[in-house]
Length: 334
Image (cartoon, rainbow, N blue to C red; front, top):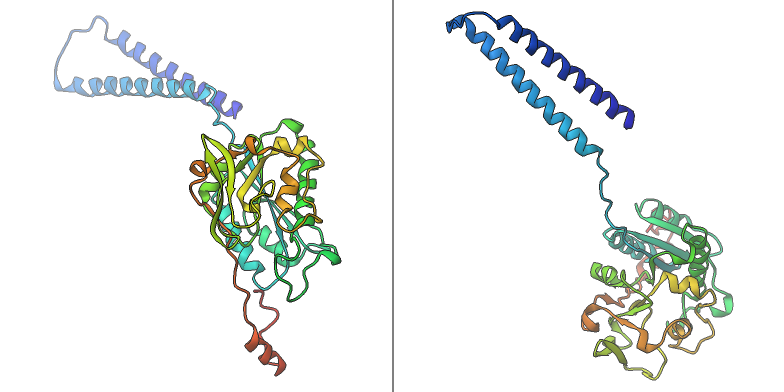
């Protein structure tokens, strides 16, 4: 780039010198001659005008090159949002991850950490991430058999995604400490399940998190919403219908943690043995007090994330056709 600019400047100065020299020669030729304002002098006047125009153009080029050489101010870099998403194989998995990835495409400076509940990385998730155009990390960590939900178990019986979230935290700590800046890097950590719905605004709200930021979550806990109650800019209690005495009675989608805080507390993780409803508290208790929580979303008065769930598909007709050998082509990925 520097060499190209030097060559361009050299060319401009050579042209400038030649035009000036031609003007000087012409002026000397006119000395001592009588002024004869006849029609045959008009071409000479036009030549002088053209030379002056060329000089003006060269001056503009030199001025523009001087401006280009000045250092440009770089825009302030946004803190990275590290989103940890546990996922597991099921019929709606691809649909859920597709919707989520296309939401994340609209969020600047986001790093998606996808952790499969699997002993290996599956082709479906590998291909989806490869085509996502996102900055991502693909991990896997199987759930222990005794912690897995069995067919017919209610979703609340055992916490889901514990090992996967902890694996995401482990990778994040190792990776970030290997980067310049170590424990002092700016960033935010958020746990985004693949079946929720997210407003783009929630990501900009959480980006300024200093310790732990909080906000309402819609359609959760058998209620229209659960939320921290804010008075005087501080969280004083929680609006929830089930065991409000829990240390942090919040949904996983209702908080974000600063990267610095995660790195400074290497033992902080989710406890798979925590009682039902205490999973979030098991992680947050060692990181923050209620008085330190940072209310977002207009003092926790706006719902910007929803605990939606895709309906489990009914496959009765598919099963009947499979019994006749007429089932859908298994090579078609759904």
